[in-house]
Image (tube, rainbow, N blue to C red; front, side):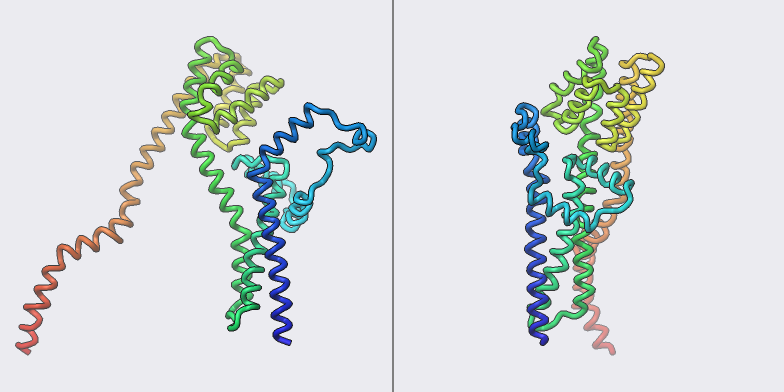
Length: 322
């Protein structure tokens, strides 16, 4: 009976591992490798019209559900929050990480469930097939499932931090170039286009965001609203301040060049302050390796000969005296 129970548990765990592995593979494919295919499908839908059969049926090729999308949707329902604000917060977090596909939330939530099943089901299968039973198997399985559920959150947080750090590095130079173009007589739309062309290699991340902002302005979105959307997509406080400044220039009719120059000077000053803060923290951060690594070696070199001499000379003398 015990062997039958172990075999059933192992079979269930193996099935869970296979299903979770397929789900993770589909997540990775759709998340990283499907961007080019998605762009190509959008271009194809834009250029070519739907077939007559599809028009007669009231369906287009884009409306056909795929197997991967259905599986990810089924997995994401297990961890999808019920509150709409929580889903909106997840969507905004993924936007900050640069994951802006239509199924980004479903891929994210589905990967959390899949990794939890892989961690818990894998350990459960190994425990069932092991000769000696593992103690506290239920607690370890729960812990591994919880870790698998948290791993996507950690990965997204690291991606957001790296992306915002890169944007912060590229922003002051880009804004200086934008100020130069505006003061030279170009309009804001033409200045954005020129800045994007000049910074496409040195700052590709911010150039892509600026390209989308310029397209929104050309489509009829107000300048302040377009830059506010840029700040919401990236999550940078500097861009929020810039958006608020542009809104004020539109309301009061002040010079855009002067406002941009003030913002560029403020950003460079804040960048200098952050560099000074990091430089001041170096001495504090060096205490840990200094105490754990350097001081023991230094004490060994300095006190080592004295300790050897004490052991060879003083201790035998004291022992003989006793």
